[in-house]
Image (cartoon, rainbow over all chains, first blue to last red; front, side):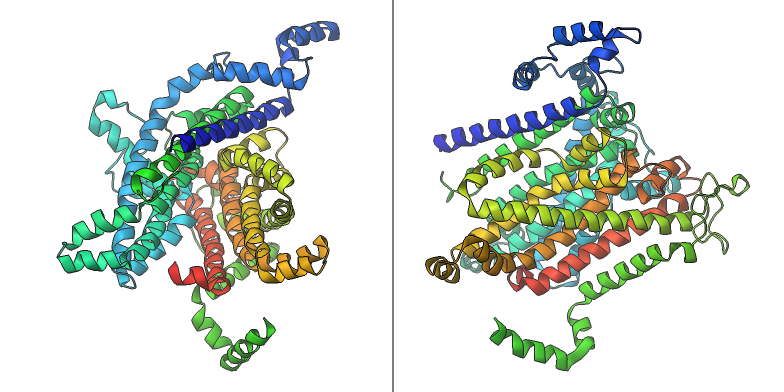
Length: 313
Length: 289
């Protein structure tokens, strides 16, 4: 077990290292000459060359990468070209709306998807099952921004039940905070619900066909506990895997959802950076999101032993 | 193979087209929608007016017999722009799927047969897969002036690892089959083994995967255009139509829902074709999903 955890941690470090190399090369390929920008418009080529040397831009690539990687590991993601503020500071300012959105989306989506998937498997072949499967194909096909505008149009503009857009910090009250997150979470979570509901149904169908489920039923275990306690836990491994894989889907969707609902989070930060070609921000955010994704997948792998005692590493 | 396939072929021929339709409603439905959309995109100049011409007098008009889907904030015809927008979506979907399949197949075959290539390539792909697809595409597009080829390349890049993994998995399972061992034992050269024995086994799962990659490519292209990181704004795409009209959602919802519906419909059709093909080509999965 310990050996597995160590091996898994090492491979996580390796993957993050590779992500770092990709992103560093991206920085290197990006147009625009930082030395030229610092030197100003009237600089002579010799002055620019001197600044390049002082910045270390004339050193071999692997040396530059080493220095950059050391800085990143110590939390220094560079400085925004446009606002001259450290990227880490900009991200810290924007982190709460994104965390709020991700949290409410995951909770809402997992609850909805588990209920839908379990019920569909229980009543396999029924109208309910068909409905869940159709919704899961549709949910996978409608892009986040189309769902988002549809939800805004129906629930915010026409019915006026919920605010159109924006973000209110949790400190200003639970309902103002939550009401601004309901529609974004639904829009962002739809594809996620579709994905998890589908795999839950498949995994549950396998488990429900097992002999021990028949035994449980014969013993007189009530339907509710049978489905949600006995069966769902046995079906847990593939479901947790998909919950983890789906995080990548969510991260891509966060960027779009924050734009649709005007949430001042990290996704907006990167979208604004695209139009200004502010490469340090783009890189910093990609690095952060990739890191989150890699760590979540590490946790997913480690959680298998808790869910399925048969798995021993 | 041929011995087993012959009676099935005869059977389906006897039952004809109607039987095929009844057995594969999603596949047929998806194909019909895609063919109609492709025809509309090809015949755009015939069935739709000018997608660029702005008529300031005619701003944000609701759908009418003159403008089937209404007009946008510059008085441009939403129907015409939606029809022309189909061109970009379809081209990107087909191009990304074909290129990703070709590149992924080559790398996957190599990785499946060479230990040295495998260990290096699979690690590199693990790194690539850890970067969320949309962000990788955004970063790639932001490096150069946006054009359709750049957008295609930017979307192909994150799709490749998935194809490679699929091909490698198929190669690894086929490699253990007795007929491959027999070919190796009888001294068949590797290129011939790959071509004659391995390649055919990768085709059915690759075709299914290609449809899913195409669906994902169309969605990512729309997202890039929506975020302003896609094709140049003067080319109408479903993504940039929605982005440019979004402040008029309450006033003129047709400017958003025209292209939005088209986008959802096409992606749904591609996904249905994928599901239909998967059911036909891989009965093992078909029974479970």
